[in-house]
Length: 416
Length: 180
Ligand SMILES: Cc1cc2nc3c(=O)[nH]c(=O)nc-3n(C[C@H](O)[C@H](O)[C@H](O)COP(=O)(O)OP(=O)(O)OC[C@H]3O[C@@H](n4cnc5c(N)ncnc54)[C@H](O)[C@@H]3O)c2cc1C
Ligand code: SF4
Ligand code: SF4
Ligand code: SF4
Ligand code: SF4
Image 1 (spheres, rainbow over the protein chains, first blue to last red):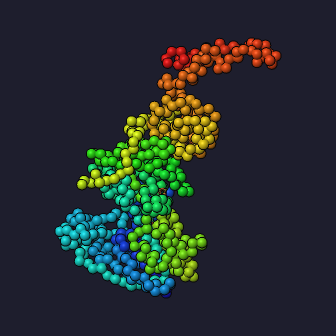
Image 2: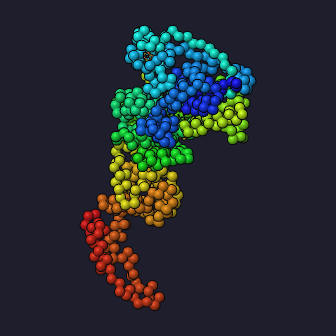
Image 3: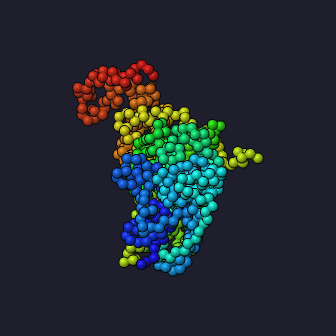
């Protein structure tokens, strides 16, 4: 029997690749360094292009937003998938089609096979958290840096004895035939772009943080509020291209931030009573079918200002006084704003450069580049090494899924 | 050494910015409800209209800027602008607009609103006056032109009384007649 395929990263792309390989009878080891799978999409509310979760089945369409179930049990129950969360790649050696991979599995503080998500530990200790009721694996997470008295109590009182605070990391070495990189992207924390005051002013946030706020299943129950005082946020401004298309940060266009900014603007304009949104932009880049979001935004009364922000000043009551240069009018405009949302660059995730170096891959602006730039096989990044989703550069979910399927078909062809 | 003193931002703009809270957010809706302005908010500021316009070169506010000003709520500036009155109504902008914004018609709407509020440039008012008084904009005066063409001096059957009568009952009549 052939060796299994290693899929690194259990976001939308990695999960798709894993499930479809497994469904075709291929053994898969699916590794993610986090305790909960799903990746960035876990934190989204509604997803373009359907305003729904790409993964869900018709019967579930009545619920708003992303369901965060992601093939629910498939990842856990598909016998061909070995899911290893909380796991990092220590080393990769060997030769293509016979890679030796050393994995370090983080301490298993909560045994997902035992946890019944009763919530007892979350109540008594800050160190435990329930990422989402639909999280996979179905278990709470534990953060050892927040160890408190309550955690010890929880360990004792847990009805299924799922907690073990002194768990240790372990190592495992496996042999795999192919490697699929699906480590996704990371939203840049724009602290260095200091004219916007991110990290200094509480009411300046990123789009991913806004997605969390808007999500009815999120920590605030979907209430649109100012982080500084929890008061309702009515006047929202977004600024595009923060750290993207900027030689000081990332020279590339992050490609999807215009679309998700418009998605958020429309949600606020259409679903929140008297929410007023202004979008400050250099270009609005809504590629192919997503132009619809732009037109809908204008119809919904979202205000577009072509230009840049001159300065952001916070007043005593945490309102932001923002001066914007409107290049179409050649005038400066001053706005009073509750929440400034930065459409921050999507950057390669931490640790990707090491993987690229170890496997000797090509890079494209820090992301993984195709092995043969001239070929149409963008997902083939090395000999028996493939990539899909955000790891190839910013991509939406449907594109990530398509790439994952392309990877699956390449691997299946290779095994015939 | 406080943090605020440390922070170096871009310099304060020397000219006071336009204060958005002093503008009229209802203006957009007001225009939107007028004839042929349904697509107003579809404008994405591509400047096609300005590129098409044969006269905007001479204007302080170009057609795309006027549309932006309407969207932003700059009611006073738009309604008192000379540009809406100088528009040649050639409809070039309207025909080319990729978002089907009826630019020329929207400027008509603006003129109607401005007129309602009595903001009309004197030269336009003078034209109105001549219409009311003479029933014509271009009066056939000395008849040498007609004579040269071997026509009789008087235009036969020309009677502007009815039109004058009608015009007096319109807004033009009201504006020229009484209020300034
Ligand atoms: C604000 C915002 C809104 C968005 N809205 C939409 C939308 O409406 N519609 C849409 O289609 N798309 C949207 N997107 C894009 C969408 O999030 C991505 O297309 C999708 O999440 C990409 O999935 P992925 O699997 O490639 O990567 P990710 O979701 O980033 O998953 C990568 C996974 O790999 C793991 N990982 C990373 N490095 C390692 C490592 N070294 N070892 C082990 N594991 C690792 C991570 O923990 C993570 O679980 C949005 C993005 C943002 C930022
Ligand atoms: S107390 Fe035990 S079973 Fe309950 S949520 Fe915590 S770990 Fe899971
Ligand atoms: S998608 Fe839009 S916001 Fe993002 S980098 Fe490109 S132009 Fe800027
Ligand atoms: S042509 Fe139409 S869309 Fe373009 S700026 Fe003019 S009104 Fe707006
Ligand atoms: S109709 Fe008026 S605004 Fe439009 S192109 Fe002609 S002159 Fe310019």
